[in-house]
View 1: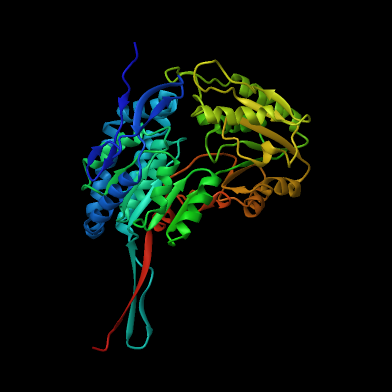
View 2: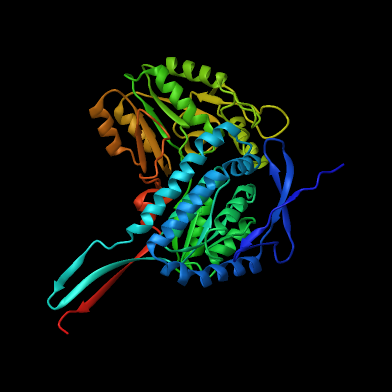
Length: 479
């Protein structure tokens, strides 16, 4: 007997709707490999409707006082806390993540981030006012941009959704948000919660595939397109948005170097780095995936890291002993497996390197050593529970290897030498440099990279500013 699949729907102008043409896609639980729901495969009519709703709602939302927008966001944060267990259940079904870690590591920062941007809503201010020409006063207005087309990824569907909508709404914009086609469930639930608090049209959700996202970016209504995704997707968005000069906000891939010097506490570094590399199955743009170790401690470090990998467990969401769940989808499992299958002869798999079980998309914690700087697995993002290890001879070579990739999102330095840490933080070409830690994020500090990791910032006042525009107003004071 077949189980009836749950029916997810778009959220447009304050109501849930099927796709205009009735098309749907199946949504797969990656922990089981089985379908649990259907979601609209939204087309042009659905995108048009969502954009019209957002455009119609924009003037009134823009003209609300910052205090009123703050109040709404604070209500959203409270509602997320109150309905946390529902959000966790939806996210776990979306992603297969461990229930306990989703509860402890995602809900609290999400709520905190919404509250941060609720405060930022009251900081829409200019930086200068005065007379810069005789008889004339200049002031700066900081205003919302308009309708924002936003595309969230599948690795953190809820949290990345928050990173998108919270600063946009706080600044007075309206939103059309598309989750990944593999992870729509928690975003649809967020729409239900947010829609009960903000006016119709302020927050809209359309589900669908890449074509749906393309339609959103190419649509003439949005003034801004924001995406968290692959480098390829970011390039396509930038190209599409250039046709009508939309603003673009891109948070793309990463290949974070983890530079470990000889004076490091090896046991502590291995513990923290393995956690930062394997958490969320390594499906994190900032994951500690590319370790560079001084040659004098290389062998000892690799042995310890391989043991940490062997001691790390992956498994079903209700298993309290697991650190991470499955890869998100069958294609991602194929991609991660392919990197290991194509390893050059000089590489050595120290731990893992294989699929776990036949049910779901689980992959073992993996450590690979013996690699060279131009190897595929060093240069390209794996986005899986795979940590590579290279050795370096001195500080200069460490910097050369660390910066020698196309990505520039995050990095870390491990040393007891303060002067060395400061030198490294200056020359590492990454949007974030952690020292003796890796992966913590706070709402007050920016997240975003350089090079092919994209541009624009999430979180912080800088992320808030990205959703505003600056206007100069000059007036005669001579009557």
